Amino acid sequence: MNVLRMLKHVFAAADLAAIGQAITASEIRHRGELRFVVEAGLPPAALWRDTSPRQRAAELFAVERVWDTEENSGILIYVLLADRRVEILADRGITARVPQAEWDAICRGMEQGFRAGGWREGALAAVNRASELLAEHFPAAGRNPNELPDAPLML
Image (cartoon, rainbow, N blue to C red):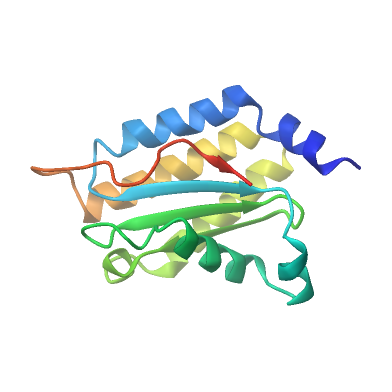
């Protein structure tokens, strides 16, 4: 199986654009910052270390500087296609208000949507639910800079 070809078909350009637009629209409603990252498979060094999807998400959380927002309100939505896993990591400002169980439920729902073939729908549902939680706990008020890129990152 050609993973790169699969990646292109799974997250077509229109799907990625829709996810980016959903993130842009959502960040108007709250002070959180969403970063959506899709990776076809782990790099060889990560495989050698037996890196879990959660550990890889934590690495990317740092690399993508999701932690570096003014209010510590960054969220990473990480999709690892090879393992069919989704992980969501929230910065400390958010974890103080939203339990990890909420993020895990979004992950499992997204994975179910993916298994059913609803890639775009699953991703958009995850972005929308994350936005609801952020709007509840970090509603938009006053200055609301866009601190992280809204377009999904394909690795």
